Length: 374
Length: 221
Image (tube, rainbow over all chains, first blue to last red; front, top):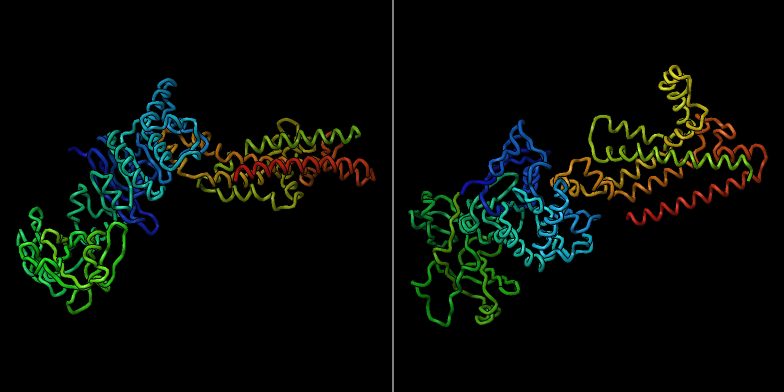
């Protein structure tokens, strides 16, 4: 897969410096990170709306920006931009908005193309409406249609779902995903919501404070964040710190809160920290297993990394319960007043009567302890 | 109504219409540039345009004489070349009214242009529009009501202009006497009936203009 999009950009602003370099192939690249990390600035550099101090931007081998020598104006970049809040022209109809970028084409072609785009996005019946008369989802489609109609080489979307209510957001996230896949335009999407990033992306570029901290295919990012800080930016829960006991290419033994834990080492990374060095790792709350008391003592062939603790707090998330468990081990708990967050489905919570019974043994499979390189 | 007052009324409307047209031609581009561009001298232009709003009109009129009078910075070369001077002609009334009305239009139009979402302009850029086309197709249409309200205010100001007009154009009956000047003259010479008639006409015109401006403002909001 050759890279369709390459960007290296440095932009100094008062109190903030953007200094990023990444590339993307076919499909959707998502810029993910906290607000103020420089994601929108990057989109503006790509679109030619903001001029970097230094760097190089190329799309499909066509150089759009280079040092002080090349700076293609936004009008000639063939880059479609879907703005946060959509920025539809409020005084123009849906059809006029979608046809806005086709002005230099012959009238007949312009009308055919506009009609085709409206039809493809299911907007044909709304052609004469004004943006104020549309629902949030319809506005999003008009904004997409307007950006896609001139057949851009690259499509940029800035927080495309943030203007919508939560229930609509989820439906439109999948609709947007479908449209991006169907149109096969290389796209860059900005979001600060990891679920959104994961659903839309082929490749995720993680931003923090004006820099790229990791760029990887989405599944690699999910299971192998490059560092503890990436894991925290992704909102991963149970990011913990222990001490290395022994590391081999297959396994890492570590000590944490008085427990000896065994984790799988990633053979692709062959991360071999020396004994007694600090090590960060994470455990997804839904991968912690409570051990049922009505089935006899824990079977060591099924359960490893067994610990005992007390549920000190629980929260109902509708379909799941989040339990905060504090170990019996002496010393301060790892995460404020608890050590591990455990997520169980509602049914399990009810069957095990967790609301009454607060003392639990639990286990974590060695494959569910993910070691984070320092 | 007497022929004199009818002539004053006709002149006033002609002056106000022309001054409003000049305001549109100069003030709208000026408002756009002040709202959207950053350049050296921007603050100075802003100050010069706004000054007639706070200066006594006679002071503005004095500056206009300094600029356009027979011995003025612009007036002297013009007089030397053509033997003609704008001072004491009805054109001078148009110039005075234009300068006095300009800050009202520029300030109103500028605020309207500044309130247009810049993302709309950026969207137009990425869709291939130059800044010029974007201003014509996006920014100005969206600022339209504010600009129209500014033009209405400018028209009203031009209609009622007195001090600067008197300084630059004088008060020559039948030639440069506009309604406000005619009212002053009528009161000075004890023609109470004529003064009252002109006052009523001017008040009604101004009320109509204010109602129009309020409607435009309500639609703009």
